[in-house]
Length: 127
Image (cartoon, rainbow, N blue to C red; front, side, top):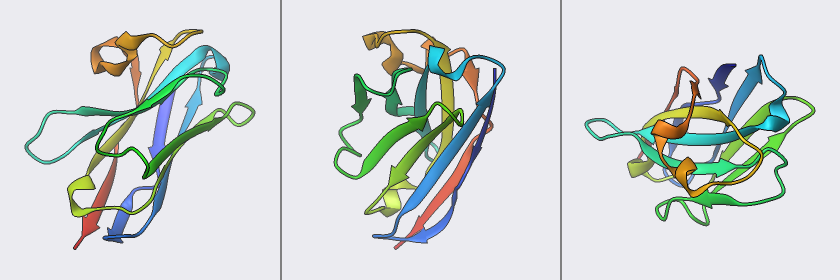
């Protein structure tokens, strides 16, 4: 599975960005997709994840609940992360990740559970 993330950039606080991650190499609907981020000097952290169907369980970290939305288009093999009301503390490199799976598992909150990773896209939020 190859993952290509895009959509990062420089935005002012309060603004919005939509990240995309295009997948290839495996039937997309069989993959649980996740977004993680890594701020400067900090470990990578879970942001959100979505099951293969897109209809069931997805989770957000407390810091982004109500501001970020994960979605997917299985016909295009793309997962999105819509980010609104961005804050300077959202500044990070965002990574998409994938793991084969048909159902949500709590262990998918952990980056170690993902088999495939995109290259990361930088989001910079200015104050």
